[in-house]
Image (cartoon, rainbow, N blue to C red; front, side, top):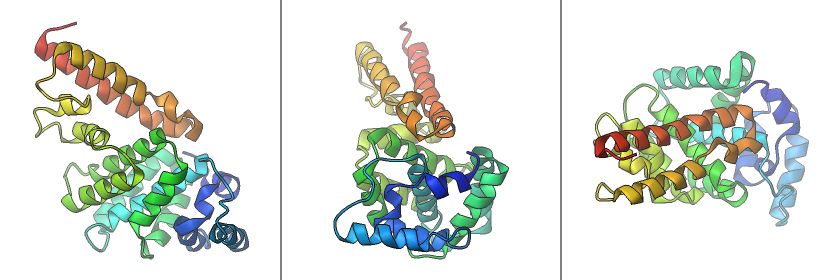
Length: 250
């Protein structure tokens, strides 16, 4: 995800209003002079006129950074180890130049009080369902990056998902691959079915999940986001192959 500068200066839409707009006004102030523009959007928002109705690539990425900050603050003050995990994630997914800018924005966000419920509800108004599921996917990737499950972080992600309108079935399906080492039924959960499901039910669920999580559903959010979505799509395929092997059907 190269070049935050490009989408910050020209790729932001709905995040310039509402509670997220108030947060990023401070967060990007040290990088760009956007205070007047953000102020104008805030005025429109307060009059009940959102300046944008669609999700831009920048909206998704700024929303992701704000939600990352929420997860990092889940158990109190973010630890240096957590910041290192996030830094590796940003480097791997934003590129070296973009990661440096993203990290500075994130550090500024961590200095602020963030109401994850208000933020999630704002995102829910403007982002399509596929984009919201991908946000949850990326938050889980960060939360489990160190190989350990932090119950406080999972709780925050669950609250965010609920306020994004992500269903319980989809939330559990996104989480399941990360807990496969201690959940013998992870493959069923990934496909959104119970272990009592018939082979026909599993085949039907697989087709539905494969369609729902196909990377093309988030193509409008940029090639890098689409690439990350491929990982969830791959997990669906892995779950299906595991059940085919265990049950002996084709």
